[in-house]
Length: 245
Image (cartoon, rainbow, N blue to C red):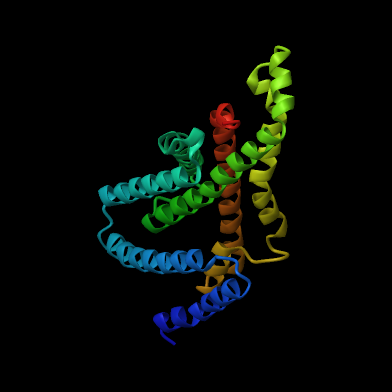
C-alpha cells in the first residue's frame, strides 16, 4: 500500500469524528477539518524540504530552518497567549519563554555530547522541543488566569495588607505550574507500561535495536520534561502581573 493510500484511509477516522461532531452538535467540524488538512499539507511539504536539506547539508540552511521554526512557534504561541489583550506582548513573552528554554536545554545536551552534530537529529529534536513547549505556554497561562480570577479577592486582600503581587499570587503560580507539567509527568509515568513513546516506536519499526531506541527515548523524554518545566516557569514569572486583566 502506498504512502498516500494510507493517508486517505486515515482520513476515514477524521470523517467519522466530523460525523460525531455534527450528530451531537459539538461545532468541532471546522477545527477538525482545518487542522487535519493543515497537518497533511505541512508534513508533506516538510518531508520534501527535509529531503532537499539533507541532500545539500548546508550549515546556513540548517540555521535558517531552525530560525523559521522558532519564529513560527513564537507566532503560534502569541495566538494562544494574548497577554493582557496584546498579541505582541504574547509574542514577546511566549516566544521568548519557549525559545530560550529550548535553546538552553538543547545546547546543554549538545555541549555534553548527548546530541550529535547531525542534520536530521538536530532539526527533528528542535522541532520536537518547540512543539512540546507550545502546550506548556498555553496550559500555564490559562491555569494562572483562571486561578487568579477565582482568588481575586484573596489576592487583593493580601496586597492591601502589604504583600507584593508576586507573594500574593504564589499559590496561583504553584497551581498553574502543576497543571502545566501534569501531562509531562503522566507521560513519564506511563512510558513503557501503558504506551511505547513515539520516538522509540518509530525507531523500533525502522529496525533499530530496541534497547538503543529506549535509551534514546529516555534522553528525549528528559529533554521534553526540562524544556516544559523551564518554559512554564518563564511564562508564569513573566505574565503573572497580567493574569487578572
